[in-house]
Image (cartoon, rainbow, N blue to C red):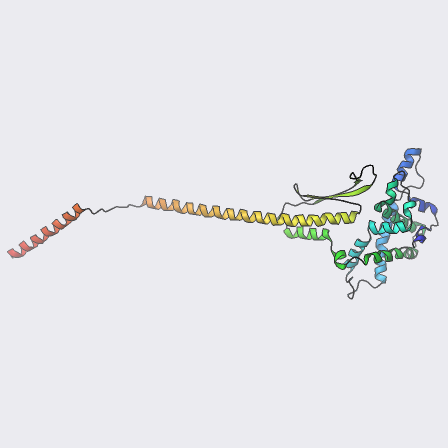
Length: 314
């Protein structure tokens, strides 16, 4: 299907495109001489850029974006491109080209079936064509558009919701909505390392770690860099929401405790003020005993008798 991709005017460019850096290093270690074809690292970068460029080129020639389709905006095409141009799909096309039997990886034979290695090899072949075809963009279009069509065919199984959803963007949007309310400072680390889970294997995988703070860290492993990274951000989004809910609950509890403390302080201040007022008052207590009542009655009788005597002498 894609055999035309292996047709080069300059065969040395094809050999270089098929030569992984591991092969170059091992060749030098064995012979003490540099590998005259070099490696395909630069071609990989060129190939990635060309695939992305011609993906958008193909979509525009098909009349996208437009309001009558699912691809209404340029950003929709970019999101779809990000979903389709990945190691999984490109490595499947590399196998159709039989690249697993052509690629040079030194003695690391297990890498011949590694999706990333195969994907990079396909990219490097596309990148090498740019130089082989003397920078002829029309010729490159004829070479690369069939690859884009194959990617789009694979993408038919992906729903619109799936290719439009981006966990990383959702995570960053949610984090920005908090506006510094939480002690979160994301730090992403990506490592390409040997898979220690499989004994006596040279298989390597991505280890992607997202550290949110000193106590919250998400780590995932996978063969596909983009998928692994998106899984990390999806888990981070879930953990961030839980962390936010717990923080709000703790803050609510703290506010309730502060309110109780303020109420107790207000009551204490009121009692202190009342006691002070009472202590400063001149309070005289009048106690009326039976003896005092008799004295009061006696005085009244005496006064009455005096009045009668006065009237009698007038």
